[in-house]
Length: 69
Image (cartoon, rainbow, N blue to C red; front, side, top):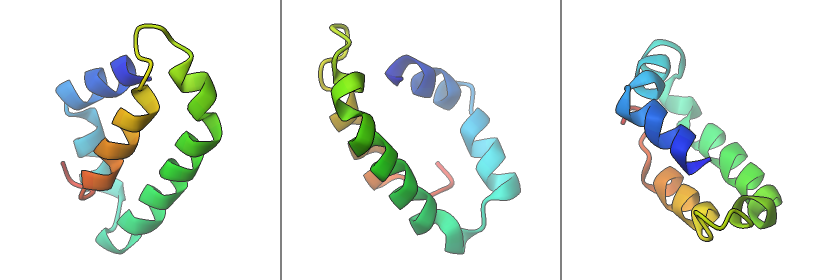
């Protein structure tokens, strides 16, 4: 998951999609939905030996995210 997010961020794909489709008023709702999904899958996400704290990293990223990178 971390590698995929990093690649998307590096290539600025996420930012382009958000600028095009996500309204500022929707950022909090989208963040909450993603944080909930991370919480549900945390055990599976953290099972990867290459990223044993990947769910925490993902939560931190989403908590700081403003919707527009």
